[in-house]
Image (tube, rainbow, N blue to C red; front, side, top):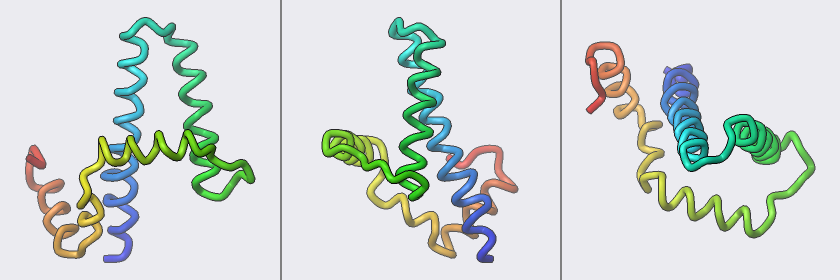
Length: 105
């Protein structure tokens, strides 16, 4: 059961959704007129450094302005109860839905 915390909950449901959101953000930036190569380089650079900082792999610090922007993004984009997916009963239901349903809706 503990391995379910990693897969699919953390890896596919959380990381997959966050990755999909990042790709959708990239698509919106390009659609707004930013050249694709510039958008890709800029956003992938930010993804790398933010992940390194947040996972303690870099001694750099996130600026106060960036912290405020991240908090705004979390409040705006994430549901307040998102951590419930780590509840064992919720995990069982999610696994059942993933394996036996064509949609999680």
